[in-house]
View 1 (cartoon, rainbow over the protein chains, first blue to last red):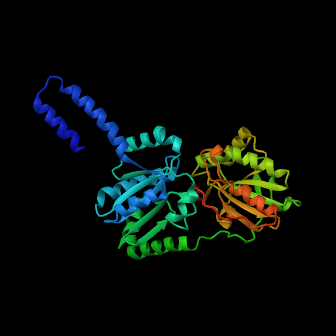
View 2 (view 1 turned 60 degrees about the horizontal axis):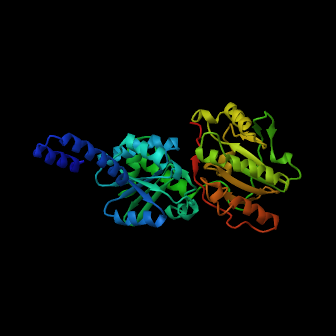
View 3 (view 1 turned 180 degrees about the horizontal axis):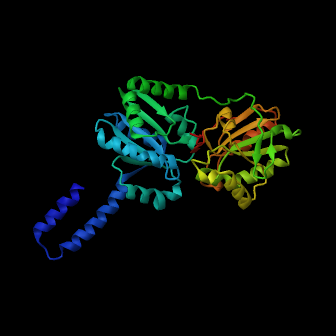
Length: 175
Length: 197
């Protein structure tokens, strides 16, 4: 968080007696605001599509998951590793968690894991309104992953068993 | 060699979603002999007078399936008197999900007071034939075991009170009138079925 560092630096420079209090307030404020900034809520498929279009400069890997899906949670670290190792792609993990569990389950989970990839949340709960638009062959199970590279789309309804498998699959899909 | 192996894997991926397998509308479904939580073996052939069958692949562990439990109980009760038989099948490998073991199924059925057979696809031979990929996943069959509807129970897993379209019930109503259900296929989100390794 470069902004935080900068602010602390400025505050330190002022050498005010109560700068600790400022830092505390500032940190609290930032932790709340990043929480809100971190999770992008997609209310409709169209909103997700706008995100896709805005992020078309690099191959985009979208993983659909939920905190209630055990195999999804298992493969998230592979996406994290991919995100850290390959700066030529962008990764977005879209959660399908229940609307009522965003505050008490999804956000605490993401906070704890502190993943560096982009995090989204799909609030549209009538799946027939958007699942077929992601891929008409998607039967609806998760985990599922969509790779978009310019006009090419590759979709898999599959759980990656290792980082190597995911990495190889992504590389094959975008070349 | 490594490259060929991965290429093959990639091709398999591509094939896996161009050729999905499983039943399509109009296919004849296979009958089965599966044991239920009462230790009896059930088969669709046992129900000579059934007007149709509601086959629901479901399980204990999946929160999506749990959200639908009460609705499944209501459906079983409602349609029993109309001549439709509801059979729930747990397709999961209990090694992957201990909560889906046969013993755990018995406990859950008792807790919830299931009034319908809760079958165990122990050898995992039935769910791939149907093409079930997740729980819950519904297949509606007519009395001749012809597949008439595949997909979700309704359009709102989270809030039963906010359901706008009861896909399964509408499909049964269509059968009652001698019509083809529309939609005959819907998308349903759920927990992917775990195969034995």
